[in-house]
Length: 261
Image (cartoon, rainbow, N blue to C red; front, side, top):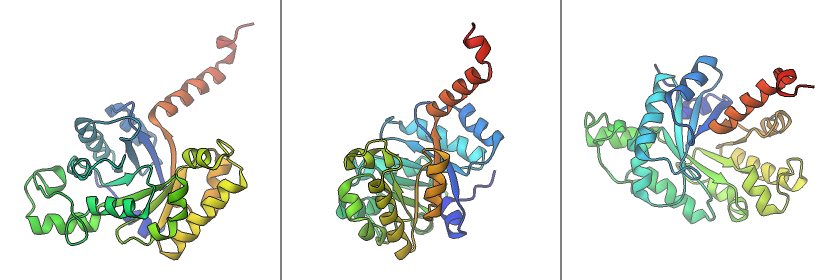
């Protein structure tokens, strides 16, 4: 199935709808989302879930079968992990827990080949057609097509968000409301003026530098407010959270059987 990339959707001004996998990487999870429809792709969590190379290969094969694009959210470990995630077939990468402008720049360099970056070069992975592309075509295609996002979820990253948005090769800033609210001292207060001031700061930085930004759809009101500020990527839940929602909805629908009098 043909895949429309996140980069092309952003270029067209679309609002991208995504979900997260990490704890339940199984073809049925992807097929269900594909059958029900409405989603443009996924992000694979390698920060909290420590997903393996084999799991990322499987996840991306399932994505392609359902017409989904993808990226891996990963910790700032090393360039080799970034390279292997891309060779496994991921459409891009997102850096978690960024603290400084220098870290964001280094992450972009991990994600791009020379002259922009210093990504390790090996054309035996999926993204090079398992050796089917010449090195020249492979590096040119990858530098053009690889999606790169930086999470803004720490106080230092928020302070530097304008400079991070200005980095060549960064496609999107992704605000992590849970971590950011924790650092700001307003944990879980989704209406906090302080938290929304942070969203406005990121939105302004991205508008200035013609970059997109995204966040978690905490609830419908939160998502509406974010899109009003220009948010172009909303994540609607993780695999295990969506399963819990389904169980809770079933219990509510059949309340007389789960809560007999």
